[in-house]
Image 1: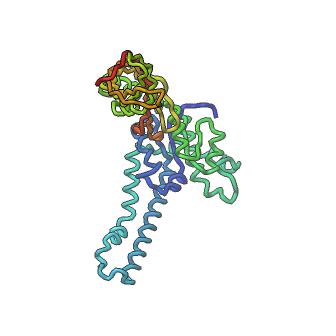
Image 2 (image 1 turned 30 degrees about the vertical axis):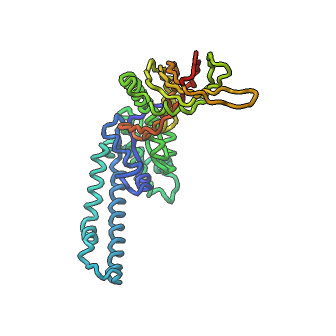
Image 3 (image 1 turned 60 degrees about the horizontal axis):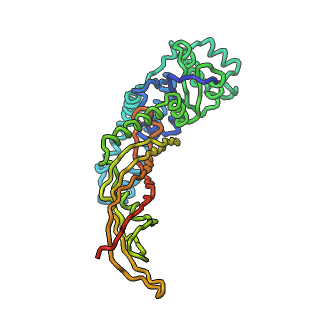
Length: 370
């Protein structure tokens, strides 16, 4: 199929069944976003009827199993302190199963903005019968023909709806009849999984890229606004303390061997921010920025007079200097997001990695402080 921009999404009952009609959680919950999406969520009445009948039947059967279990517990007196009135759930389910199922369906329809397609307005009976007698998809085997009528009605209705309204519809179904029909259609395209369908819609709308670009722009703006208050001073202090400093020392004291006792930043100032790289992989992205810093250090030294003849170090004293250095801090922040939520993509901060250039220090005229 040539590359098209999908305007509508529709799903086969078999997919709903595979998710156990769990509208309130999992992948079916992602359908709620289409209430405010530019992509319309549609179902033919025949598919909606199948969903309704299956959901009611499975809800009634679940209630029956609960009732049987409760009756078994009561009759065998496993819990003698419990009385029958303690099992209110039993009686509630017995009388309300169909209402519970229909209420869930109505909530699902409202939450997703579902639009039902009327077959009466979108079905060509002559085309349907022609497909039936010529074994065109979804009609495949003679033995199953009568069971394939609901699928055929749904697909023919969706095809005509698409033609009349100049739409391209993305379907989700694992049924080979649906897949074969869509392979020959100009207006319908079929994916086997909801996740794959959502990926397709995401890619065509660039919603993830647009959202992340907006997020990064705000991120840089906030960095500039926060200035010095953003700088992770504790992390920088830790990095400074980890370095093994290569000291180039000029001292009037002969044979003096210096050793850095400690180094810390007394002040840090942000000079500039440079966006280096953004990397997006599926549901994770990283932002790599380079912060140009001016750091005023407080460095303490221990000084020793080294006796070459006796191979002995004689401690002289301690001294301090406060050099100002310029160094670049690379900050790599990692975020994750829900790649299937095309409307309210929630970004979660995972972690930070920091890389500080090791300072190139030169201390001139270091003398011991006695």
